[in-house]
Image (cartoon, rainbow, N blue to C red):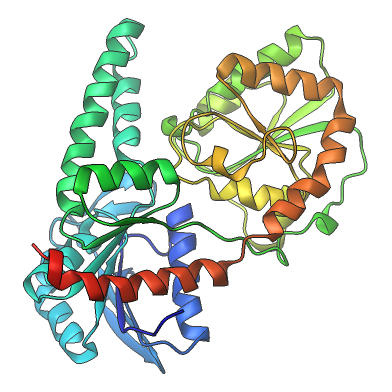
Length: 394
């Protein structure tokens, strides 16, 4: 790490259960443990300011006009009423760089102050919002012919992406969780863009926490149960298993979302656990035989790395970030399409020893990724943003 700039982080999500919030909480912990000057502006249950040594926390209570945009994550059109308070705390803290973590209400405040207070800005991409938007819209338009849906979906993705890039352009440097996104964002914003990977806690997530002794094939999933995660594909997986004569299987789906009831009605052999935390989550991971991750919209796929740390190989789609985490055929599988995804699961169901042989490879691959290394690199980018801001500031 080059130096230790004063960082003001504007976090759209913090207390919610999602990959972005997990990364942001860990970044704050990194700053606290390293005793680095750090201000986190985020939404909370009450409006309050807390100072804990080097760590400064400003929580803003969202108004009754807030509306949900993803589970418990909300957008407050009246969050701008805190503009004076935020400015006061920024003036006290005197940040060298503002880090915005999305495009929601809190980050919009961050973009505003970075621009008008002449503070260097860095933006990190955590969610493929353009794909999520298209996916949810197409669910409502499912009555249209497939070709028409595809055309509409592509146009919506393109339109939303262009809009997002106009806002991200306000930051001097962009961070994204996979190289495809890094290249696309750099091309569209013409700003320096870099990889911001993810780490995993290999002490907490450990194969030794496996308690199962039976021979049932446990096909696991961890994440939001929402349309953009393609979770209805589990019904197709089950049908394919039954058609292939596989009976000794079980789905364990960890998470919650709007697709809960549909999955309960359409899966015959599945356990929906709801959201799990702590040791319950660690044991659930370790007791899986294969993580089945059909999402085609994830920018990174934290849960894939978490499963691997637990000694569990994963099968993923060719779209999005999860494929960058896997060495195909060594510590997991990258399907070429949905048909190959189904065929891979059937093949593994009939050759369970293959999964047992890959458990150690998955664990070894995960152990090479540490959160400390990730955040040291982020701090290097903070430093870089202060150097380039005068040259490319809007």
